[in-house]
Length: 66
Image (cartoon, rainbow, N blue to C red; front, top):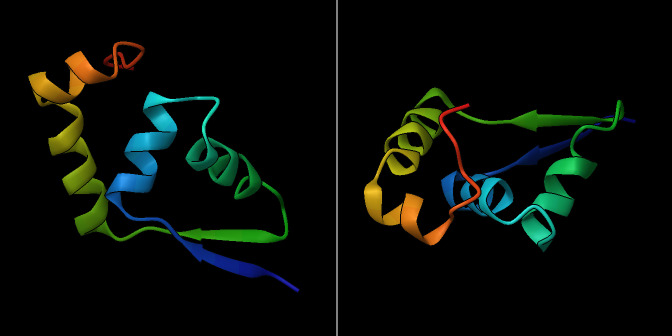
């Protein structure tokens, strides 16, 4: 049985910015073959916007352009 999960911008931001946190653990779990991660185009556009904000980059220094 495939499980579908939906992550919003904040979950993805927290996963990217804090690799040891609970959001990152959720993202790692979503990489399993029995899980389908559902993210909208609008959600990805929002994430790109948020990741480019200087204030966010300052708060999450581990983030890079990659």
